[in-house]
Length: 266
Image 1 (cartoon, rainbow, N blue to C red):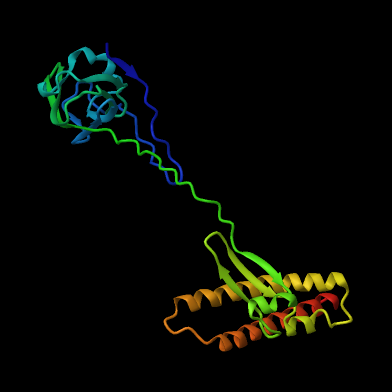
Image 2: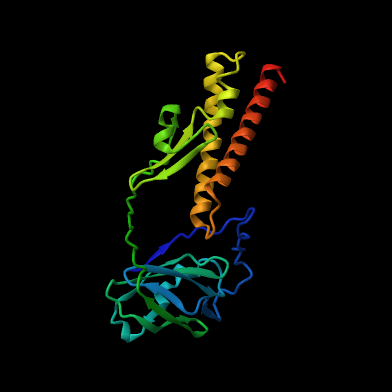
């Protein structure tokens, strides 16, 4: 059995639709026209859809005269689509709802509405397009190995021979299959002069400044390594050593200026 539904009207407001005029007092008591306000009307297998139907009659003509209304579907649909419900006629419009079975034939079919009135018979027709429901995409979960990041490590004077370093060496990057090492020379001549030979610094200040030096210089080492790896004509080791020492000196200067400003209360 068909049933009448109460359908909420669109409300006004910023960004919303203007409230529809539902005053049907100026409309005739007996309708003279009827039309589907959408063509085609699309419906998914196993789903439902709604469509506004315009009828020029006073409010309440539906459902009062619903027995005089017939909705018929194309025989090719095999009774797989049904007329489920119609809303109360307000302001010359009624919202109709249709339901499709999960095995409804796909394609385009005809839907027709026939309304018998005191003034005669009025009809309207539209195309009903049956489509497959959107398939739910399977979520692909990609599991990645945790990114351990590069290991930054201080190296001291006793490792220079094994690494091929001297007092000017700032550090180097060594990439293995299982890890990336960024090795920094803790006894580099400029760093040693700025920290260990500075008698004014406490042990805590030395550790703080060494930590502030570690990260930016490690980044510079990796950037230099990455650029040289991609270059068709990489610079000579001696040139790289000089450039890195200049970077280390610049970082130390910034650290000293920041420390001075901090200690001066600036």
